[in-house]
Length: 243
Image 1 (cartoon, rainbow, N blue to C red):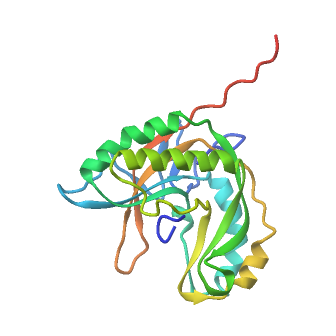
Image 2 (cartoon, rainbow, N blue to C red; image 1 turned 30 degrees about the vertical axis):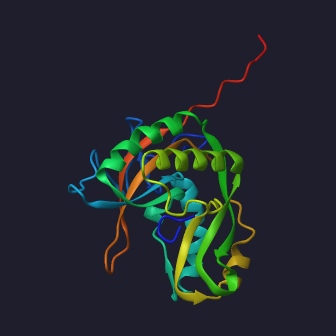
């Protein structure tokens, strides 16, 4: 599942200088936009449709590690359209074209969905391609960790979006979480890339927030993203010490 075809705190101090996929931690402790601008309102004209998706954003150090791995392969495969690190994210639901009215109903639904789920641990792991490595349209990095919690969060997001009148464009498809590394203008053989990336195991991170994002598509430039809202997941329940 990816926003264009098809979150987060480190165990230590959050990174306050480098970019995450969707947000940057600031000294004030709030998630502020980095590669993606944040808007209090959608900026849509009455009746205008917006291309929306819901995602989680990995922290900067995690993206740095994955970027360092992928970097050496970019020069050798210029036939691929490598995605921008500044906009890397993990899509929970791609909603497609949504009007302003439905977007307004969507926000409280997403807030409720976020409150029902605890933050959980993930890590980027391995690689793959859609639909197959020998005729790929998308090259991606997969995820390990609490994939069950991730799938349940995606289900809640999709259900909330449907109730708001903005059902996911890929509703009914199996949720396949990943981060898109590259896209192919024409089906390409990326077997060697998948094999080279297969053993990757990135640093673990905590997904602790969901984002509603608007995608602005240009004729020639990369998509621009605007975060319309962000909602935290619940903190894990403290363990009972027995005292």
